[in-house]
Length: 423
Image (cartoon, rainbow, N blue to C red):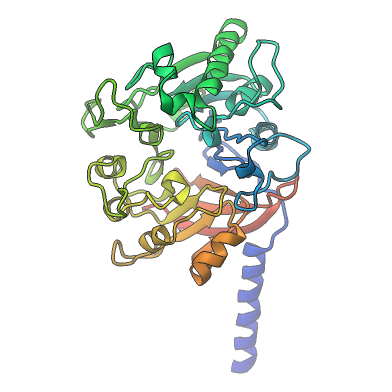
């Protein structure tokens, strides 16, 4: 009798594992009260589509690396997925069309570009089509031409350098930029001018310290415990008090794009989520840099439930102080190359010495080169490929993680993890 009960218990457990990890069904529709955060994998850079509890829509980044670069087409980089019938931004729009709330207007209420690198906002090249407005269709410009954006937020253009200044553009670091940041920015500004005139697009720089720039558009009174806190932009950092800030950089000082990334924290009840573009915290000698962005933003971010890996998990990111301070239950890695993650980064984010307790790690892709170098450590990931969806519910008290098939246009569920209790 005991043996039969034990066998039945095992079968029930096996069935629950099959249900959770092999559903092969569609993600249930968003409904009011859900916060959905979709980390979209195209193989060409970051893109995260969000639906807030009242149906407000938000896109963070629209990576679109050029297909003309050997870097992009080499084995060290991911393939364009699910296939090459569309460009990366066209696949982003296709994804949004599948998961946008059915009763909402087909639009993005907000879009945020963390910084001006190709894997975050696009890159011009000879293969790009030209829109009616005279700008090349790449990255966020292509997304916004296919799917209306109401408000586009970036890091601005005039601090710490005025990027529209011809003398600045002629500097060696910009004139010899392999990935065409300034040429792409010129197309980006054309896009903004055209869409502002023709379709009423609003364009703003992120206001550091503000909680009233990215807000619920439809039923804010129903969700008083939801907010988007602007943490940092251009090296200007919120102090955690009112809207006070301090700056790491001076006018004329350009540390590169990554430290200038826009950083935000999303709060919904007890649930907290952080994403910070390509900020870093490790110096050139592999040591913790206490004057880097990660070290400065960590105290004002505080502990969170979910965090994306800064700089895709590159070796210069996730310093020990930062990891110990924000200590997420879930790490999400948005990557596209065999360089990500650094093996030492994986050591830090999984270290129980830096912070106790369980943590689960998910990645949009894990290339064979990474697996060959890191070896068995990659087994610490719950998932190594696919779109990663965080669904928060119960007024921010609970959340689940879904992994969706990125090789198919149907995007069925590959696995489900949770429920997790917000901390």
